[in-house]
Image (cartoon, rainbow, N blue to C red; front, side, top):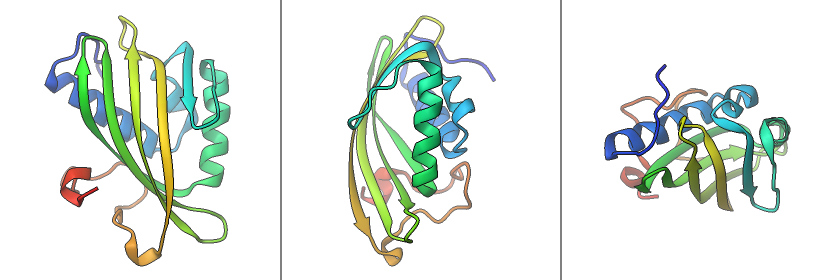
Length: 153
């Protein structure tokens, strides 16, 4: 697959967001980490991983806790080598309690199209199983499934 590099257009920024969503929906920390620079800096809630090794450890912990994780990302804005997205994902903990986590991310890319900075703000909302909106099989969200906007999220 071709790496999408800045400066971004509406088409390439949208494709970059969908690729990130697809990679995160694999729940494969090693695959996801390859989208980031070796020294990428993150802010994710109260954690501040730096570099791929710490990113892999963070994602491993995350997906050991956030079970049956399904994510939708949506482009919010872009300019030059930066993209802003909003997202929501659903997951449950080991007691079976479901959550929908809402958030925003700001991304900055290097000239080779790798993410060098990721700043995420996230809020979790407990939901009942009946309130779930994401029902596709684990993995990539099907192209015909609704977006965040179409779901009213």
